[in-house]
Image (cartoon, rainbow, N blue to C red; front, side, top):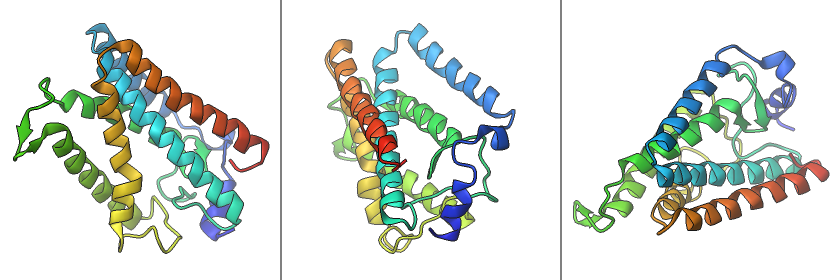
Length: 213
């Protein structure tokens, strides 16, 4: 295992050594956002946000699998010493990242115009927001890597080739969130979210059994 990976493993799922009080108000902020949107009957916004969150969990699972199968390092990691977390859930996935992605999913769905066919700069607004938000997210991720908070130790996942992060890391997140948001009924949106989260749950169980997580 790389030095960064060994560092992260020392705190993996060990809240007794990492938990900080700030995690509690962060959770309450998330709870407020979700409850407010549900109270205002923005069900599709919340379900779209859950879809993005579920897609991120899938990415975190295969990232963990690469770490433990290779015996070297995850594609991205969150080591000890910089950007310390209250709880490291998986090798590159902490409680702050988890809450962040759910909040981000809700936020980006709130940006969408009601008219799905409306054009911005000559393109469909859903495509426009996918491109802009994906690009912004990759830029932020590259900055976090530059700061040392997010470690990248594989040659194919570096700031020198951000298009891989663009295609794999974020574009599917926003595309799936918008797809779920635009479903014709709450029931159909719930079905898609159920498939995503159900698949995540199966992978987690299998990976836990194989010590890949």
